[in-house]
Image 1 (tube, rainbow, N blue to C red):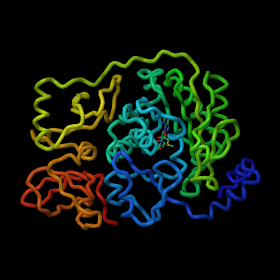
Image 2 (cartoon, protein in one colour):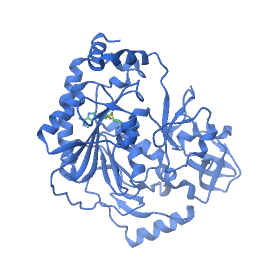
Image 3 (tube, rainbow, N blue to C red):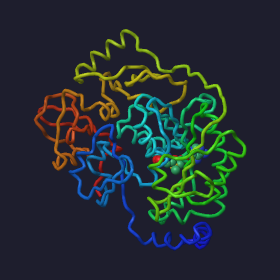
Image 4 (cartoon, protein in one colour):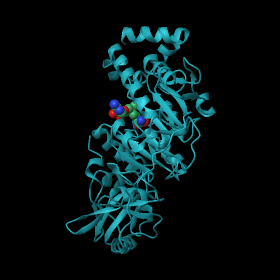
Length: 436
Ligand code: SAM
């Protein structure tokens, strides 16, 4: 353990310091958030050692790893440490809210936000392009239909989205002190200089993020670190300069956290709940004019509409979506939404692409609407063929020739193309299980 880090924790926690230290010898409990957009959770009886947590859709699990479990590939849950689930649940969110998740990768909090706005949407933004690809992959795996993914700086977002959002979540880059119990390596990168450097970045990020919030809208600021410099100091310097006020978090979140060092902010420590989290909710008191979006989503031409209707009718039992055009892609959306002209990695569910003049259904579409396909092949979770499919192998099954969707216990995994009962594997290469 880093001596300076420990001294600072002692100064911060006083009498609680020894309970904190003791928690480092205790077992870290692993957990996930259930994807209730896909399943009601009855299916979890098929996994040993699952225990419901006292937080919405949260479960503890005992297995060594769930990352390669077929249900994980099917997008039925997102593996996430308990206290990281709290920030998106800290306020009442109306089902038609427009939300920005400013620092979103790999997407744990985006998932929780998405579940709360069936009639609205979440823009999941990640400035680091490489990390935004991971975010996109999780959005696809979970089949989130109301999440748009972008990779922009907060300055770029300000050009298009000034005072636009009902909620902006700033899950800020931080020194990650709350991760030290789980990830001993993270401790090696820690220094006081880094804490101070990050505090400057966080102040700047919060200030700019506040300009994206509409009148009476909310900013949620969170970190997974303990230092006051990255938490209370950031909030204090913000409310001293901007017309936002701190508000209480929801009771559910309050019960699982403890007081911070200014009124209304909340903290989690390993001896309270999860690994470590700071949460502050700020309400915009200013009367600001929202930016009016000009829509980049275009209608399909009559010819395109007809072509896609014929194409999709071949595969799907019904079409509970509308089709729109985003740049060169045809996308499926559950609701007609207005999106300012942005560079988005994903805007709605991509239907498919033409490859050598042949139309191939996109993996994202399979994850979101695969259960509606005529041609499916359903396997039990314990069937060895499921893992063979997830490894990218060809499998055998009595199915109709042509494209179809492989299901595990009725949940879509990916596409196949069958010919004489051989199922050619279309599970994307980057997602396949690798032999260890
Ligand atoms: N919210 C994510 C989740 O729940 O899965 C975790 C986000 S992580 C704590 C912070 C993110 O902020 C990182 O993905 C990092 O790349 C991003 N980041 C780093 N510098 C940034 C900056 N200057 N502006 C915006 N985001 C930044």
